[in-house]
Image (cartoon, rainbow over all chains, first blue to last red; front, side, top):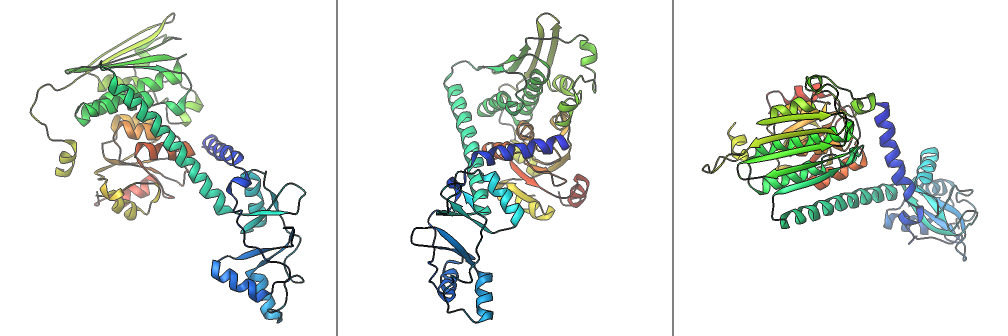
Length: 320
Length: 109
């Protein structure tokens, strides 16, 4: 689990490093001169529901901050109608606009501030914006959304190109070690079956065959391919790799036998159930392996032909 | 049971959920070995797992799983959230264990 957590943290950090403070800060900041009174500022904070505002001189140089706390103190001390210059919070922690969101996040963690004044550059006192932790979070969400949209668009364009092909033979190249892309080919095959109206339980069996085979190629081989030949009466899936080959196929077919390492098993793969799963889902199954040319798996699933409309999955589910 | 009711009943954190009132959940499965889930999880199920990486969404997609729940306060990789969104598979989180969540489902599903 430690390994997984480290991986998650690394990914978030990678995103956070890419985000610069200037991209996420609010640059349209309401400021006050040092001659403003606490009462003026209090009215403004109330109106905008802010919890503090920066105090700057004519040149935009940051002099201090007045927070709600400062206003309460001023009220208690009886100088609520005095200029803030004397009493505002000074000696502020700031951040230059070219710093990464990770630097900002570290400052937020360390000091527990609600907001950070953003400076034009390192060593400059000129205020160019205000940054809250919420700004960083919303930007992270935007990035995740845009990753999702990209993936969606890729899949849409793959689906489009598939629709235009006349033959229902789908071919995929499978690269080794690309865990994050595992399942892309299987998803395409499953979508195609759905589009052809193949019943859900049969489409799921084909999908499991494709996914397990895809994972096997990624985990154990030097790379390979998958062909799915979809006909009216059957789906034939052929998955081949470029080696290194399986020395003892009989053992490899035993449930629970695995050659997977600790890293693979931590991800929930390598339980020694892949090949038995494929065999169980297939109506016809064969596997050949050579230490010279690699491994080829052929699995066929029969499709029901010319039967009157079967009850759909949804109705079946509702009846139970 | 509809997914929105299930989320409320189990007190799940809806990390990436779209239109839960339209999703029907008819079963449940616990498993952290992906091949085991591929082999045994019923369709339209809620799946409890500690695996937060992106391949759980591919597995959920293959098996027509309605909702993936990351138990024990496991957080998803950013790619997992993105993939769940693009594949239209609900992804939730919970501080509870798989066992606790399953026990809450007894007599409800």
